Amino acid sequence: MSGKKETLRAVIADDEALARTYLRELLGEQSGVVIIAECADGFEAIKACANSAPDIIFLDIQMPKLDGFEVAELIDDQIQIVFVTAYDEYAVRAFEVHAVDYLLKPFFPQRLAEAVERARRRLITPVDPVSTIAQQARSPKSAPQRIVIKDGANVVVIPMGDIDYLRAQGDYVALHTGGLSHLKHQTLTSLEQQLDPNRFVRIHRSTIVAFDRIARIEPMTKDTKVAILKDGTELPISRSGLGRLRRLMEV
Image (tube, rainbow, N blue to C red):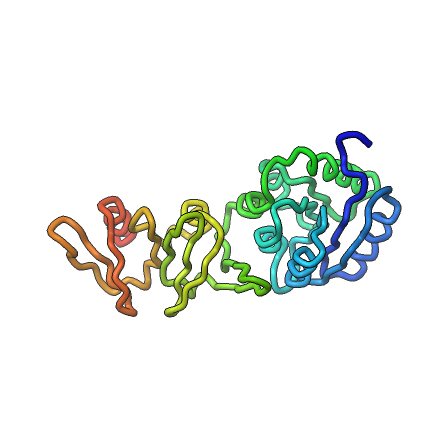
């Protein structure tokens, strides 16, 4: 078959056993699809993707421990994602960022066949990494309540309320929580788009701080200011950052 991958190595991730069974049976009817793992939660899905290097994952959104979008952030960008879910609220956003497909339960075998075909072609001509899909396919109405980070074989889940401040480090962001630091492979600008603007404020081109962690603002030099956090950490404030702080204080 020219221009397409002959055999797809697939992972199924869904917390409902009946849904996994149904999908397994339908995929069994598809030519050239080999199921290499089935997972009942987000952690299992990440482990399966790391250990088995699948071509495609059929991924539910509402799952225990980590949801489908959090899984998408942490797996290899080369793995093609087909969201399989009973919820349609993220569908439009997913297609806007070129997700492979979005199967709304219940679906018919022909729709699954179309998704498989799209995945074959996408493996030859990739469009957007799945991390971009994960960031942009979320509902624009609400900010996420946690951030997930892959640390070797482990997954660290950080509630937004635990974050003191974030600092850019090249293509990474250091998230500082209670004296600890966690590195996430993402730019500060893209991560800022996920944060609640009423809770976090960018005080410098390289620093975002949780507003409620600021104890006071003091002069650093004649023309510059510094934010003193409740734990004593000192963070420089740029002129534009000071303007953002003042606007937030007025709310």
